[in-house]
Amino acid sequence: MTAPVRPKARTDLALVVLDGEAVIYDESNEELHHLNQTATVVLSMCEGNTTIREMARELAEAFQMTMEEVEPQVRALIRQLRRAKLLEPSRNGKAHG
Amino acid sequence: MEKLDRLGWVVHRSFRVGEIDLGIRTTSPAFQEWLDYTLDEYRTEEETPTNYSVVIGGSEASGLSRRRAHVLYRITATMLRTFHLPTVGRALLDDLGTLIYATEDDDSLYAEVGAIEVNGKTALVPLILWSLFNPMTSRAERMGIRLSTARIHRLDLYAPFLLPLPTEKLRMPHDALPRLEALHNPVENGHVDRMIVQEERPVDAVFAWGHVGEPYLKVSRGDIALDLAVAALNLRVMKQSALEGLARFLEGMPTFVLNADRPGKILETVVEAMEKLPDR
Image (cartoon, rainbow over all chains, first blue to last red):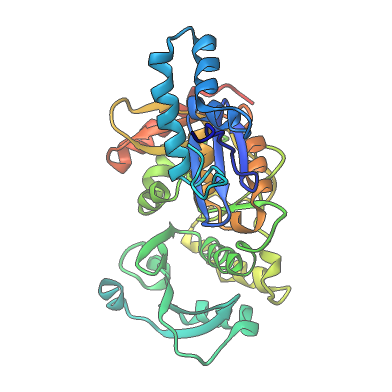
């Protein structure tokens, strides 16, 4: 059984947060990204030491929602962050998430 | 370009500014003479396409049947329509200067955006809107609006100000601008009808464009920061400091998105929105 993924945001990105929304510049491909408040929170939780389930649990408690509601959304956001190349690849060669 | 080709050009000159070989043509021998004098250091014999076209208008005093504005075209787009000849020359020099520094300087952010002034307040608008407004200088003026001459503006990294373009980085004779002023015929009665940022100028609002619905809506500063970052010519050089500078620039800034509508209607909406802004 493989260890659960613990997503980690890339540390080489230029990033600012305005009113809870992140604006990100990826120098490697000169792309710009704008994350809404929820995606910004999820990205901020990607420190490499929290599983997706743990993130979902934390958010569910904060927003007083159920895991059934929150976890799929968090997983979808992680997939989007991975597709946008904002996360570091995992050790097994795949991007976290 | 074919539409412009019929306008009776006197001469076409080639210049190399920054890394760019470009061509400038005009309908006025006097203006061309000033251009040759001012940009002598940048002359090249390379064959170049026409990047800028300067139509010099005038009035009955200069033998025309009716009063005509001076027009500066960049490729085929109208950059500027004005009855004030020195404004044309100044706008051309400002634009040329950006070829030298706008992508490499790191002391401020250079963004391809337009600016407008309404009753003493200044707003940034997307470049595409500024381009649509450009042929409407007289109408805009009647509405109390002055459009910027520049299509690239210099944003302060520490406060919500526009800074003057460092056109002094364009090497030209010290008397180039006085000579330009001397070309202006007072009988033409042209006045300064466009906004030129000649000193630090506070920005009161930033507009985006393109939603459908209400004439204008508040929009997040994150949305506007993205737009300005996309428009930034030296983002690649500045990276994190560019984004941090934008965050400071937009601190407390009223930010709106304008409805997709006819340019004249959008102008009215901009006036309405800016009149409702609190005084600085």
